[in-house]
Every structure is written in structure tokens, then in C-alpha cells.
Image 1 (cartoon, rainbow, N blue to C red):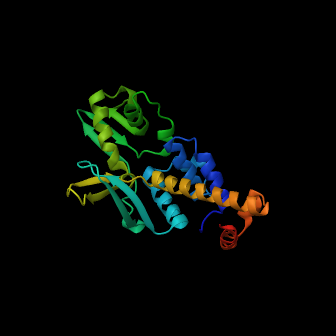
Image 2 (tube, rainbow, N blue to C red; image 1 turned 45 degrees about the horizontal axis):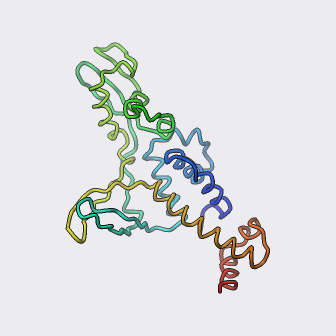
Image 3 (cartoon, rainbow, N blue to C red; image 1 turned 180 degrees about the vertical axis):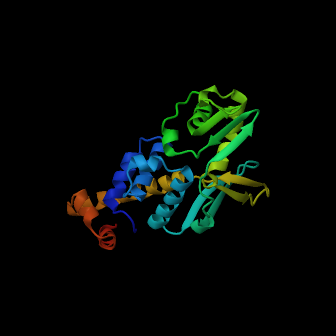
Length: 237
């Protein structure tokens, strides 16, 4: 497997085990972009984050993606397999200005830092407030917290326009009932599921070689993947 070594990936997996999804996605992004600080990465728009995670996932596990979606009508689990290249990157993030009822509000794209700083209470409103880059009422500057509730609700619906690449949907059709629907696809969740599965297999391999040869985890992970696999085949029952 190309990309970071097995030892580093196990560290990433261990770090992500107890993290909430937004922080775990940032942990994965830090592994994908080691030249950037986490503070810098936390300020990336989510579309840019997801594009980097998709490239990282392709580097680690290959060009094809497997997923499962449940039909909203009959409940059938539909298995999917498709090239990662079909998830074309959307337009880059850009500010969006909304004019309504004498207000003019400029929104910026949502970042990981925004998600990490939300609390469960009234999170949608707090997210909009964080993403207001500028706001005026009849030409007079106002604070985001002073915006009326109906305007904030409308701004929440406009946030998606600031970063089209942050939303990925798959057009699906159920083979049993022919229901067609759009299913959301989250690359961070997909990558984490694959990494979690890989880590479980890797720990079993480490256990098998440690029992057979008395090697430490460090010594086993230092082996080239082909040589490690060759030893595994020798000890296989």
C-alpha cells in the first residue's frame, strides 16, 4: 500500500478512534497533508478538505470505491462500486452575498474549525453566525447575532452555495423497486471505515507474526509489505 507507512497509519487510526467525525476528518487530513499545520488545515473549506481526503484515499486503497446505500422505499441494501474519478471536484469555495429585507449579508464557506467550535444547542444558527463575513442593515454594519431569525434560517440554506464541492450526492436506483434517489456520500466517513478495517487486519497480522517469531510490533511494521506477507503465508495454518 503506497502513501504513509503502516506504523504511521496505525497511529492515525488510534488517534481517530475516540474522536467525533469533524475532528477525525481533520486527523485524516493531517495525515494526507503532513506539510501543513493542523491550524492551517482547520481553516480549509470543507470542499477542499474532501478533495484532499479523496486523493489520499485513492493513494492508500486504490482508484475504486465500494459503498452500501439503503433504498428509502423497500429498505434493500444496494451495493455500489465506482471509480473515485467519477466524484469530480466541484467549483472552488467563494463568498456569497445575500440581500433581503434591507439586509446585505456576505457568507464564507464552512471550515473544519467552524464544526469543531459548534455546540449541540442551536448549532445551525451558530454555524451561520460564524460564517457571516460581513452584514449590514440599510447600509449600517450589524453583528451576526443581531440578524433576525428568519434571515438566519434563509442564510443557512444559502451556505451550500459558498462551497459546492462540500456536498456530494450519488444518483442511485434500487434494483428491486426501481426507486431513484440521491444518496449523500461522505468521503471522510468512507476513508475512516476503510482505515478501521485495514487496521483490524494489520493487528491480526502483527499478532500472528509476533506469536510465530517473537518479533516486536516495531520490527514487524519495519518489514517491507511483500516480505511481511511472505512471512504471513509461511505461518498460515
